[in-house]
Length: 56
Image: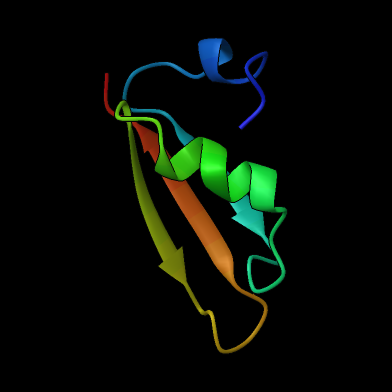
């Protein structure tokens, strides 16, 4: 996730991403390696959606 975007997201806020069945590897690294984020992937058999919540 872009380091310019994350400071704009409040604690408890969400970032929604679509087309996650072909994601940008840099985006996946950014959201999965950040301990202040909670991530869920949905509908991966179709278009794919990523839901990321800032937990702290």
